[in-house]
Amino acid sequence: MALPGREQLRGRLIVSVQAPEGSPLRDAEVIGAMAEAALANGAAGVRLESPEHIGAVRRRCPDALIIGLWKHTYAGSSVYITPGWREIEAVWSAGADVVALDATERPRPGGADLAALVSRAREQLGAPLMADVDCLENGLRAAELGCDWIGTTLYGYTEATAERKPPAWELLEPLRAALAEERTLICEGGIAAGEQAARALALGADAVVVGTAITGIDLQVAAYVKAMASA
Image (cartoon, rainbow, N blue to C red; front, top):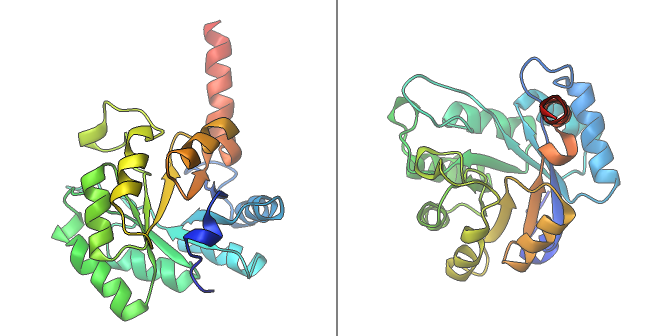
């Protein structure tokens, strides 16, 4: 499908449909059903992890807008969201419309270079890219390298931002002001209520990604149990 522009995504919700390792929800059929339910109720698209889940949702929902990623951890690097070429190629081949990848300044596995990965993905695959960033500087750099969408996904999750807590309110206005008109700005991370999603839009986000608050049954239930036990 053609990549939606800012106007098509403005004010829309994207649902992250993922489940942690070991969860009974981490099943391609379950992920597919949750993705279909999200799309049927107005989500503009879904964000999915792993080629298996991307492929399952593509078969079940052939017209869905899919942002794909693949989490892999490697020794010597804290980058795990689509860290290298192997993951980029697999996510794209599985049927993603947009490939999401870590676009922070942290060292990548095997010494891979972000600029080289972005260039290769665009030239060899023609893949649109979503840059998951943690700060203004990394967001602007990712845009300069050629990433189509900039997401605040890693704000509060990198060593440089560990003391901060998402949502990335402080990033949205300066990012929108500095990004080129054609770049799409996505607020992702920490959005847990409709009011927060609306605030993100008011601060300059074109669209909002919500995951745990909608599809994260494991984490949601554990949080309730913990809070009630402490009471």
